Image 1 (cartoon, rainbow, N blue to C red):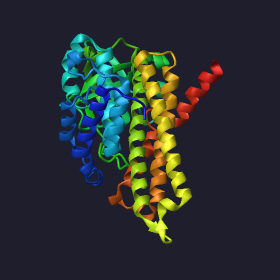
Image 2: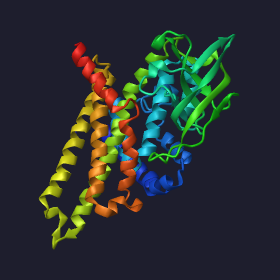
Image 3: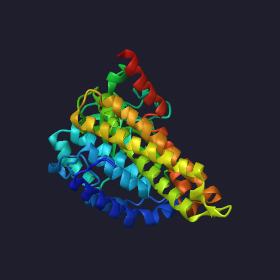
Amino acid sequence: MLRITEDQQALVDAVRDFATERIAPHALEWDEQKHFPVDVLAEAGELGLGGIYVDESYGGAGLERKDAVLIFEELSKADPALAAYISIHNMVVWMIDSFGTDEQRAQWVPQLAAMQHLGSYCLTEPGAGSDAASLSTRAVRDGDDYVLNGVKQFISGAGTSEYYVVMCRTADTGSKGISTLVVHKDTPGLSFGPNEKKMGWNTQPTRQVIFEDARVPVANRLGEEGAGFHIAMKGLNGGRINIGACSLGGGQAALEKATAYLKERTAFGAPLTTKQSLVFDLAEMDAKLEAARTLLMRAADALDRQDPDTVRLCAMAKLVATDSGFEAANTSLQLHGGYGYLHEYGVEKIARDLRVHQILEGSNEIMRLIVGRMLVDG
């Protein structure tokens, strides 16, 4: 375990208590009912979990990215899907805090940081996933408004969130023609698709976000026209660390469940812990999760310091942590035998929730591409 400060330990203890008491006991029921617990999210906001690395002057907690790694690991031990939504919400709040004007920050950040209002990040489209620069949702300037048309796909929190940070095209100049608008849920012309039926992540809604001649004030633009792709990519650096930490927490919970199960279960006249191959499986899971934890903290430190190597380290950390987390969940399910396949044991939920982490915030193939290109291009 990496050495952490007394303040960080107090933070971990507080988040662990909250996750253990308010999330973990309900996670399986919420998953089964596809329930999005906005009341519990508001309680998380009271703890400062809605604006973890946001300026304290606007209601944020003012913590570092390394603190966020610790927080998301603990939250994800209770429910990876809900932890992942809190991660996405934090990315939205950070974008407004980092790229908004003082007026925009004062208007939007306090209630978002308190999770009285929720936020959604709208980048992916039906025809533009990994190739984000090819997005086609378009905003055309008309006086003091933009007229927004297009469809966003796989949007977490859609239909419930108050605000949508939308990447849209304002010029036909590739990645340099993308801008960022903050759209309120009550904007005429904004609608939502049905809640998607998903393999996992059932404790948060996922819908299309549809814009049909939606008029958005120019005053709701973050940064200058054409700055949107830069804003989106900056946000994804932190998002990749966070989703890696969510995978780490889920994988750690799966490891702990597997260890407890092997200790109590007997077969062929002896405890399963006497079977060397099974103990080796636990050791392999532990080693890979610890390696991921170390790499996540290194990437978070680089992001805090704005190190030139940040993009590479964030991509590496996301790749290693999401692969290691899902592998631990899958191995735990196998070690549980038939019981691992049953909902009540909680292992299959972890596996279902963690599988998508290898796809979102940039698929792991894209993470390999980023790291590989940086090696080749020198």
